[in-house]
Length: 500
Ligand code: ADP
Image 1: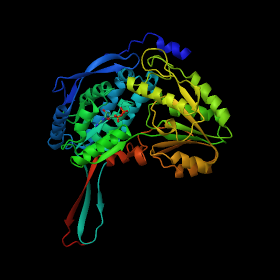
Image 2: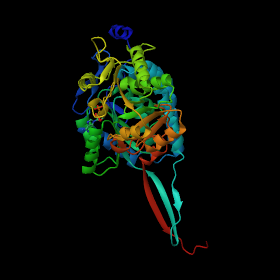
Image 3: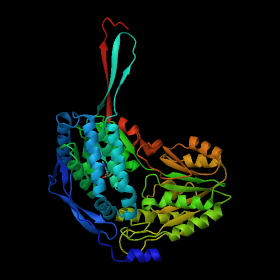
C-alpha cells in the first residue's frame, strides 16, 4: 500500500549528469569503430538515460592492442610497486571526493537504492582500492631449496593483459574486485561492462587516469555479451580472463578461452544459497536476517539466501513473521531516502521473475506475500514470500535473481545439510543457531565457498569469495585474488664452489 504509492509517484530527478558515454581506449574516450550506440535505461521508468558507444569485436581488438602496448612497452609494469600503490591510493581519494556523483549514477543506471550506493557501495570501492594498493608493494617471490648446487628463485610476475567481464547487479563493486588486484599486480586490463549498466565504470575510470594511471593500462568497452564479451574471451592477445555472471554464460566464456589461447579463467557464477534457521535461534533476529539475505539489492545477488530452511518447531511462527516483514518492506523510488527496495534491472529480468512467481503458485507452494508488480511503470516487484516450498520445484532449484523468498521446512541437521547441498551450485550459506556444535557441523559439511554463521552478506576486502561446484572457479578478494593476476617463473642458477 505505502510501497505501491511510492512507486507510482513522479520519479525524482537524479542529482547528476552523464558525462562519459564513449569507450575508453588507450586513455581516450572514443566512439565505437562502427559508430553504433545503444541505450541505457532507467529501471524506474524504462526511459532512456543516455546512448552509449557500443563496442564490438573491432573495438575489443583496439583495446587489447592498447593494453598489450601498455603492458609490453609502457611504464606501468616497470614502475616501482610503491608508485603503483600511490596511483591506487589517489584513486581511492578521488572516489571519496566524487562519492555523491558516483552513487547517484549507480542508482540511476541500476535502480539500486541511494542509501545503499552512497552508504555502502561507494565507500567499499574506496576501501577495496586501498586494500589492493596496500598489496602492490608486498608482492614478492620466494627462494626455494633444491637438491644439488643450485640457487632457485621463484619470481611472481604480472600475467599480462587481463580481460574482465562484469555483470549489472554490482557494477562498481565488480569493477573494484576485478580491476583492483589486476592493477596492483602490474597488469593491463580490458574491462567489458554489462550492457544494462555501463555508466559508473566510465566515470570512475576517468578518475583513475586523473590519479595518474598511464594510458592504455585500463581500457573500458561498453557493449553486449555475444559481440564484445565473446571477442574479449576469445582474443589471442588476452593472457587471463575473469568473469562474473550467470553459470550458462560462464560455460561459454570458458569454452571460448579454451578454444583460443587457453588463457586461464576465473569464474564467479550463480547460486541457490541456503539460509538455515535452527529451532534454538532467536526467531525475530533470524526472520530479519533471512529477509535481508534474500531481498538485499532487489534480490539480485549471486549469493542471495534464496532457500530459507526453517526448523519445523519454529516454522509457523517464522512464516508469519517473514510475511509481516515482507509486507512492511518499503518499495519505491531508489533516490528517496528510507526506501529499501527499488526496481529490478530491466524488463527481461522483471518478466522472468514474474514467470517464476507463477511457477511457484502452480507448483503448489503457498504464496503468503506479494506476487505481483508494484504500480504500472518501471520494473518494481512486490516483496514476495512462498511457504511450504518443495525441494524439486523450480523456485527451489533455479536462481530467480529477484525479490522472491522461498521457505522450506526441515527437522534435523543431517537432513538439512543433505538438502542444502543437493544443488549444482555452491556459492554461500547462512547458518542461524545458538549451538556451537550445530554451527561447526554445518560449516564443515556445507559445500559452499562462504558460510556466514549468525550473519549474512558480510563482505570485506580481505575475505576470499567464490564458489564450489557450478558456482565458480577460483577466488576473488583477499590475497587469493592476487594469484589470479600473477605468473610464476622459476629461475635456476648453478652455484659454483659454494662454501656453504
Ligand atoms: P545476466 O543473465 O544476468 O545478464 P550474463 O552472464 O549474461 O548475466 O552477463 C554477465 C556479463 O557477461 C555481461 O557483461 C554480459 O554482457 C556478458 N556476456 C553475456 N553473454 C556473453 C557471451 N556469450 N560471451 C561473453 N560475455 C557475455
